[in-house]
Length: 490
Picture (tube, rainbow, N blue to C red):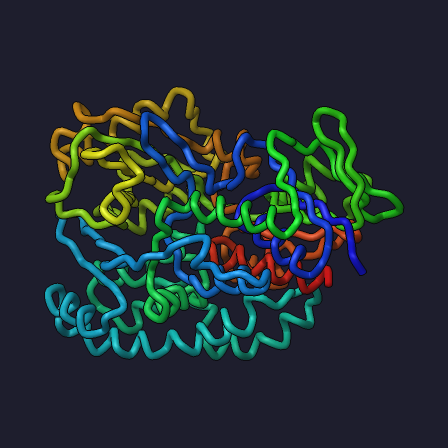
C-alpha cells in the first residue's frame, strides 16, 4: 500500500530512508530546520572555500551504490568517489608518523619501522576481524532488534567473538607496542566511542577499511548530500528547508503527522525521525505518549563525547608539510585523556586531534593557491559544565598554536577564512541531547536490542534512523538504519 511518509531531518539517515521509501512507491516529504540539507554533513561556504561540516571518511561505497541502484540509477552518474592513500597518517606525540592503507605488505613494512616483533601479532589480529565483520556487519547491521529474544539468539556468537572485551584490550592481545595498539584501536572514536569502553565488535571497522578502502567524494561530503537531494527530486520526493518541527502529532497512539514551528500541520501515515532520538522523545512527543522512553530513561543513557571543530582556509598551500588527507595526531596522554572526556566529563589542557586536509585530494574546495582544512578535537559533552562561550576562543588558540608550532608553519598569518563549532552547536543547532556529537555511546550494553529501536516502542508508525538508533553512528551504520526502516515500513 502506498503511504504518505514524513521524514524529519535531512542527514544521511533521513535522505537515504527517503530515497529507499520512494523506491518502494511511497509518497515522501522531508522537513529540515536549517537552510541547507545535510544535518551533521552541512556545508559551510566562506570566502571561496567549502568546508564539510561532518563525516569525511567514506568506508563502504557499495552502500551508496545500493541506494542508487534500488532507485534504478547509477551512483557514478551522481557522485565520484576517489580512494585515499594512505587511509590515515597517524602521528605519535613526537611527530613520528605511521601510514596505513589496504596494502598488507605496506602495513607490515610500517610495523617493521616501529616494532618488528608485532608483525606476526598484526597478521593474527587481521585474521580475526573477518569473522567479526561477517557477524557484526553482514548479518546484524541491517536487522532490527525489536525483541529481547533477538539479542539472545546472537549472544553465543558475540561471546565467541569476545565482544565483552573493549577494542583496545582486544587489539592488545595481538600487538605489544603501545603506539601500534592505539593505531589499530582508535576507530571507535570515529563513531563516538572510547576504545577502552567500546565493544570489540567495532574492530570490524579495520576489516571494512581494508576490504573496500577509504574514499573521498569529489566536491566534498556535501556533494553526496546534493546527489541524494537530486535523486529524491527525480523520484518525486520533496525536501523542505527552513521547516523546523514543533511536534509529532499522535492520534490514538499512532503518529499522524507533524506541526511546524510556524503552525503549519502536515498529515502522514508514517513519520520517520532522523532527528536525535532523545531530542525527538523529549521535545517532539508529549509525555503522556511516552511509557518506555521516559525522561528518566533518556537521562540514564550514556551519550557520546562532543567535538570542537575549527574550519579554516589559508592563502598558501602546504604541499610539503608532511601531512596527508586524513591525519590523526595522538597526544602523549591517551587513556587518561579519554577517561577525562568520557568518564570524568572534564575538559583537559591537552588533546588529540584529527586534521582533515581535503585540498590534497580535491583542490576545487578552495580558491586557487589556497588550502582548506578542518581540525577536530574530541571534548566532553555538556555534562562537563564547561562554559563554551568563554572557553571556546582559548581552546581554539591552544589548538591553532599547537598546529603552527608542529605541523603548519606560519599558519595564523595565512588564515583567510575561519569558523568553529563546539558542544553548544551540537545541542542548539543540531538538537543533539547534551551536545553529544554521535548520540548514544556505542557500549555493549547500549548496542542492538539495548539501543533505541528503529521502530518506536511508544508510538505506532514512528520510526528512527540515524546515529542514535540501531546499529549506530558512522556512515555505514546510519545507512544501515535507513535500510532497516525501509524494511519495517514495507
